[in-house]
Amino acid sequence: MRSRLLLVLAILGAVVVAAFAFPLAASTADARTREFVLSRDADLQRFADLADGYARNGNPGLLFEEAGAYYSLYGEALAVVSTRGAAPRAVGTNLDEPSVSSAIGRALRNERSSAVELLTPWSPGTVVFTKPIGTGAQVNGAVVIVASTASAREDILLAWVIITAGSLAAVIGFGVLALSVSRWVLRPLEEVSTRMQRLTKSLPFVALGGGTSDAPSAAGRTGPPELRTLSAAFETMDSAVHTSADAQRRLVADTAHQLRNPLAALQLRLETLGPRVMEDGKKSHERAMGEAIRLEEILGDLLALSVAEAPRAGGSDGDHTCVPYLAAVERAGFWHDTAAESGVIILVDDDPAGLEAHIGTGDLEQILDVLLDNTCKYAGPGTTVRISVGAGTGRDPETGRRTVVTVADDGAGVADGELELVTRRFYRGSPREGTPRDGNRPDGTGLGLSIVEALVESNGGELLLRETPGGGLTVVMSFAAPAPEEAG
Image 1 (spheres, one colour):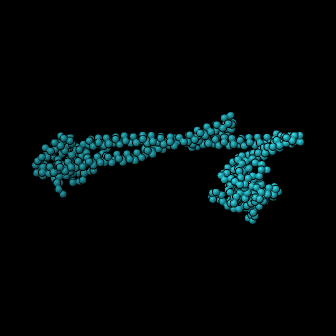
Image 2: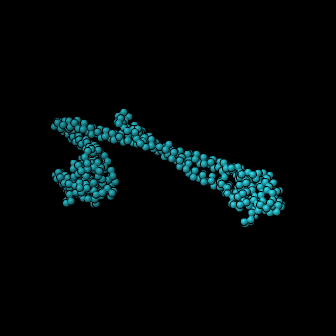
Image 3: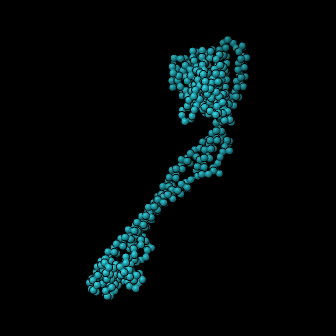
């Protein structure tokens, strides 16, 4: 990519320099040519005036003296011919030369002299200038100057050398600029590629030699080498990160699963030991049983969280479509007795439209289970939780039609400033001031809302937590709604 970028910038610079250099060189040569022609035309006019008397009556006056001085001073030949009988005179040239005789013939025929072509360093060494002597149609003779172009050609050559040197300097400057620009453009790509490779190698399973055997390489790709390397590094990092995340999820799930068996054995032994515990140790025994139960809940939630965060494989959106209202009615009936024991009322608003959402029934039921369980545990007696389903849009209106599931309660709610924290793993929020928790309720694991967030996001939904007007917590979830032709 660097060589191509340099080539493009170099060609661009050369074109720009040439676009200025060539017209400037032509303009310089044209200006020097016009100066040369004007000066010789002035000399011709002067000698034509001096030769007028000689051509008419043979009186030379100062003509011969001036012609000799002109030749001595400038080295340019001069000739005068007459049509009235005066003898032709020439200084420094021979009238028989073809170029001179041809120019004299045109002048005597009162024809316009041919224009002088643009002078260049390789132009002829002399140019013949002629002018008729006389007025109007009466031609009494002609004056000829054989002018040397050496001085004009040297001036033009010097100007062109300066222009060429300036052009080369400009091209070199463009080359330096192109090199600097290419380095400036490509340095971030190289740094990103290097950092990606370092990040990939820093992962433990990569450092041990696993996880990257199938990583893509830059070979066989198209495009600039730097971008091919960056693409390969990015794909390697992407593969490594996904493998690392999968390994972490498997580690959590396997650890939680392996701990459940010894935990079950521990609980069984604690229960068997219960009747044999002396009175002064019963309180400690009950606390140990409670911690064992809490540890079982944590392991169960860890398993649920690892499953919720696992990528969904296979099936299209149509395979994971449900009617949220039916799921809400079913779970409300399941939690009715538990909610009644906690003094909580569960209401489900009617959905006559029967809206559907792109989320599996099992996932939505698990979400509702977590939310209703939290309400029963922490909202407090006298709380009413309402589940409603409606149509709406997500945070971005361009995402299209959405199905919104809302679970709102008027219970204790969440303390100020904790709405953004309650979805963090193992974070247990505190109730609002003035609504203490029931001391008989367990503290929970702090993973419930993390599971809800993972399930919502894994189904392409959006989760929003906000305070219920008047107190309480409202959970709003929006999912993509199937197109009319997909709806069942």
